[in-house]
Length: 170
Image (cartoon, rainbow, N blue to C red; front, side):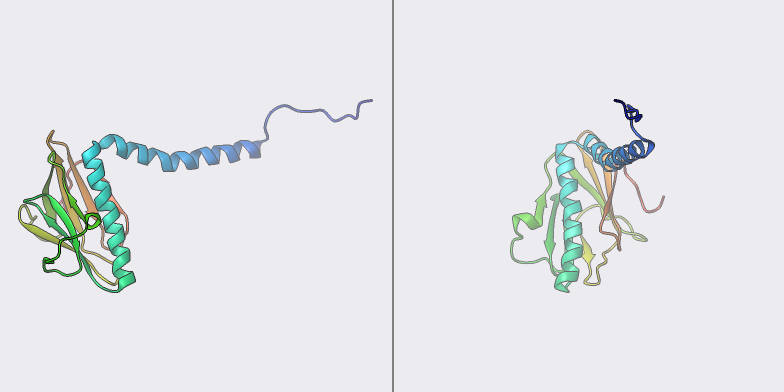
């Protein structure tokens, strides 16, 4: 006894569209992350991840705690640390609030819009309790001459990573 319904092999158009959309979504998020890994060596990757994470954390903390924070940069010793005042704090910052760059990396400059770049000494990037920060570019170079720049935007939590040196002037 046959009931007249034929079994079809294959997928419907809707099923194919859903699968393609899922694959496209996965690729949209995965490809940029894979690309960043190949641009940087381990020490540059670790340092840039620390900076990116710290910027996000400071923007959130400034709003949450309703007080300003400062990301201090010493270009002579290649060190970053966090303080809650513009003056250098007398207490030693915790390991999670400071980063000593590896010897194969150099902070070559900190740049602010409409100002000359800071090439040596100390620089301060302020994070205000209103949720915004100074706009700044952090320029890093490794021993092999590979240059990257990190752009901190005032109103965005995301830090833009460039695999070459960029400047505010062009």
